[in-house]
Length: 143
Image (cartoon, rainbow, N blue to C red):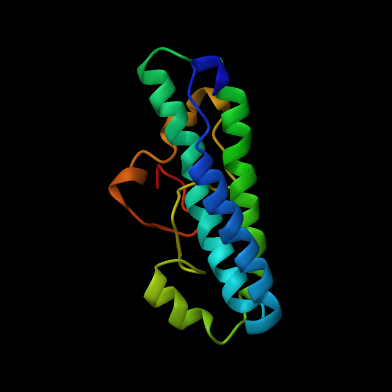
């Protein structure tokens, strides 16, 4: 961000720090299902943030950050899969999945860790992300 003179948002830094701390403390009171569920859903959405940034950079001719941005997208997907694995058998999951549109049957991204595109083809991921298109969990974008 410094390279492009984009200031860090102090508001976002504070806001997400407080949200993270609240979620962490809430685990001691409400159990682990809801914090893990919402952490997984958050990570699911985070996956596309990196690929959308690649799309934006490419639209203005910048490709020098492709590798680091590409590396982060699948890392976020690993986090999503981790949180879902922890709660996959929870009795609350089917209800939360219907209400919040994330869980075993749906994801907020189209990255499949088993069949990853190479960095050069990263623009194939998350093409419909900003339009709110939901994909089946683990679906490859060309399927």
